[in-house]
Image 1: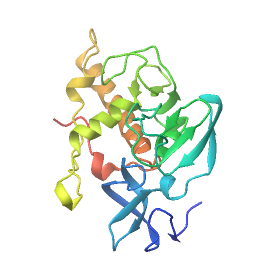
Image 2: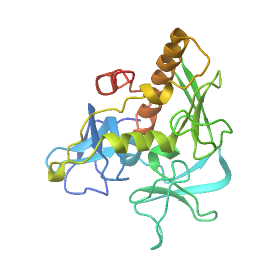
Image 3: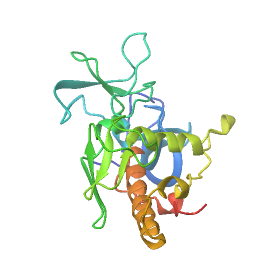
Length: 233
């Protein structure tokens, strides 16, 4: 459910207003990058993902059927913690299972099990035996895999791509909106004609766009204005 304006415990000074942006932002709740739908305080430049602005007190997840994840405003304990979905550090809002000790970023906890735009359909898996298109390794983190099983992308690798390309510019809190080229990374289909290689790259590039949208907290966003063509050098 979406509200035009909300009050939030993380920013009690002002109310936060819903807006849509094609510019990347850093969520002040989970400390991860976001794009698309958000709640924002324009006065204080305070931003929240939808999942961080309207968290559920507790959730369950299909990958961890014995777990009950509780929403916490900060990681429990004093030891460093990482997200079991993307393997990245937990530094802000988190869903934590006290029994198992598992942690999930709010956006990772809410990753859709299926991404489908009518042409490309991707399924979320906890572990995949096939190598990732980005890093070439197997079974690293949660992965999105195409129906044809030709394209596999680790959630962790998508976050690394963004981290490599988007960096904070001092106190201005602005992000450089350059998406990494995947042209060389994806052209590894040995023994295929040039035309087939190009088609594979185009399909894989389209798949990456949808995974990026989901990882950034807004799976309905095609973010075409930001992502552009991933095939460009």
